[in-house]
Amino acid sequence: MRTFFSFYTLKLPIYLVYMLQQVEYDPRKFLNWIERLIKDNKSVQSVMTRKKLVKTPKAYALLVFSYSLIAVNIFGYIFMFRSDPIVLFLGNFLLVMLIAPFVVQLSLSIITFIAYRIIILPQKKRLIAESKKIFAQHKAVKIAVIGSYGKTTMKELLKTIIGQAKDVAATPGNMNVAVSHARFAKKLTGKEDVLVVEFGEGEPGDVMSMSKTLKPDYAVITGLAPNHLDHYSDLETVASDLLSVYDVVKKDHVYVTNESMMLKAFLPKDVTHFSATSVMGWKISNVLVSVVQTTFTMTKGKKKLSIQTGLLGRHQIAPIAFGAAIADKLGLSTREIEQGCMEVLPFEHRMQPRHIHGAWLIDDTYNGNLEGLQAGLKLLHELDMKRKWYVTPGLVDQGSETERVHKELGKSIAESHADIVVLMDNSVRPIIEESMKENGFAGELRIESNPLQFYRGIEHIVAAGDLVVMQNDWTDNYN
Image: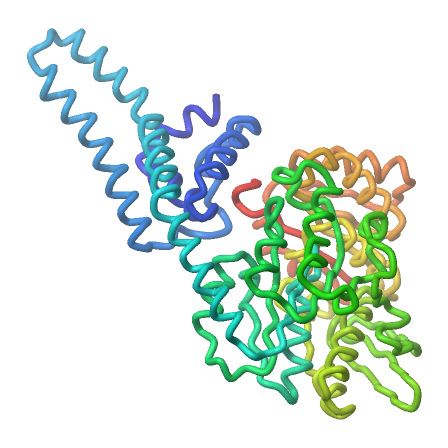
């Protein structure tokens, strides 16, 4: 009932258009969001907490349509029934007002569906076809970065390291879908030496489609996790999609992490692995991890690399080592590789350290997979600090794996020996909490119902010597 009554607000069109904007005007995702609101008994006002409506021409058009529809309903009714007896008039008017919000919602859904099919999809297909021609004519070395997690970090470190000696272009931010690749392709000059393109898997066939468009010379697979199981039937389907790159790229030019336990079960024979101990014939040793940097040594025959990077945690060793090894393969010098690794810093909201009032806060709120959360918990356990905090809302898009994944997360939290654990109060919180207790968690547990308020005020509750690891953050369409 709370959701039902929350729709009776003059700001309803703003909230609905915001929701459409956040799901890129995909009518299916929009209706799924509405369904979750009803299921979780949340108000429509709760959808807009992390961001605000971006006032684009498309958004303005939908707002004008929505408010016009409401006005037409009201004034049209008054005009048609103005001579009715007062009781009948008011009764019918109340009925019109009762259904008006749902008329707006339905109308927006229908318009968006029609526009998506008639305008947006054809436009996307045209852009992708154009990008395929651009990539085919481009002489640069093309590297595809694929995986359920770690893609953006891998892409950015490749760009930074190889960029010491080559002209490198990489897809911006987390723009990792086919239409983003198309826009990226249109901005290329044709003079680039290396293109690094991040592939995002959203539904079956995505990786194969993007591989055929780019036709990479090399591909690196960073890991497998049960993401997007609202669109993939199971983990095997996700793995099959990631590994479909083998149908386009030479087998010995596909490099696969050896540190993703979930991925190993689905790999073909004779895979070219890389890990925190070896990559492309390089041996890794002398690893040191702190709250501000990670250092290690790489040796291959008479070659030696002394690596220092701002990326935090042992799980970052393999990606950085791969970046150094592929840079060596592309002809960079020892000095250029070492300098490039030194310039690789934590990316925004990805194991990003911040010093506040004598405490260290590691912001990993863009992390959205189990293995990444477990890596953060291992770092929390390894570092020697006065008091350790762990903050998470859990994971989304886990589908049938939801219970298993969050039981694993609860177990890992217990094993980290965190002093204080803060869980956000949502649908997966009871699973995590129960698993923590079953696995002997002995610290303090706090439950927060307002994540944003907690994040904004955290600097006022930590003390000097504390370490706070914050992992994942549920976007508005999951809250």
